[in-house]
Length: 439
Figure 1: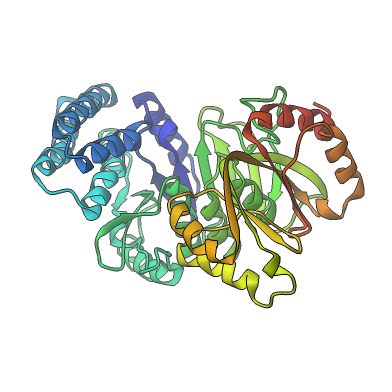
Figure 2: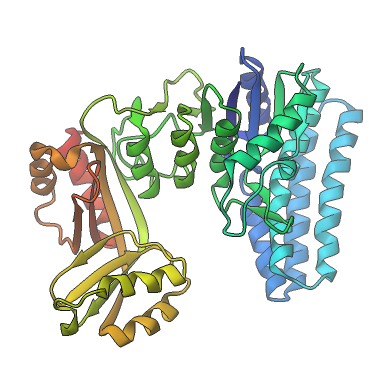
């Protein structure tokens, strides 16, 4: 069995949804197809939710009507027969009736999760109408029946596996299954989600649960590139990456793959392929357990970074100081990207400022705390590059005049990360493209 996941741009137009149907019916294996919401839908639902959160029901109603019009136009182009148009219209009406009903309900976090789930529910149901109209046998698998997270928002593959296997057993004679990405149920049984970009995560979790032969992630890009194609010319897709290399790239900004999606596939050793819906003949990128070669594979950028510096002479030989610092970040569930230390100071970077005021307040008893924003992390990723002298020479020779604030080197054999002001990112990427890849 294989898993094929299609992102929002891959199903965002009727003609692309038809193309997805062509791709999945060509599969010689049993296939679970995971769909995201139509492109633009999740952003629109977030806007609706934000309007309701601020009690701006007039704006929320305008946004709901605009999105409703889009879906009514979409299904007219998707279907050919009046019967299937009516069936699609009934699905659209059902979900937008719900969105209109919530205009009269008090806003809550649980309601917000219900709102955000509508995109995936709509895309999969409408896709099934198209398959039905074209006599393509399939089974609809509601993700809310098997995808779940615990009290710490962590998916548990053994539980998902047990639920999914029981459902699939009922349809053992079928070859094509359609389900949603992103959405799940939490430990309370409420509708929840795997956060933005979570459809990749869903696909990887499902692939792990069914021990799939491969997990294919279909987007509008022909694989993971060696640099940002929006900034650098002549970038190239990478044919093969290891799980470790892909995880570093995803975490440090490669937009094609959700960072969390690597772990389930790696843990259960399911190969991942990154493919292009618009160019299905392209090789794309294959992610496997072992690296194909040493050396630099790609450069990625993570923006919106905050630097926090704690300075205190009491740090000198102070037992347990770093533990106390880290406990503050752990308390507020805020991950640290980079860290440097000296005898009198420790500097860390974070990309989630949600609790930054609370964190600073709890750090202040330790010393003088300073916060700076407007930074980016540029990561150079490749197998064992931290142990390859020529890589480091080329790297720092390429950007010798760029002011670097922090360097993370040695913590990972596959990554060298640089903290710099965001204004230098474009120049840095272009210099690295020339210095490391001769492009």
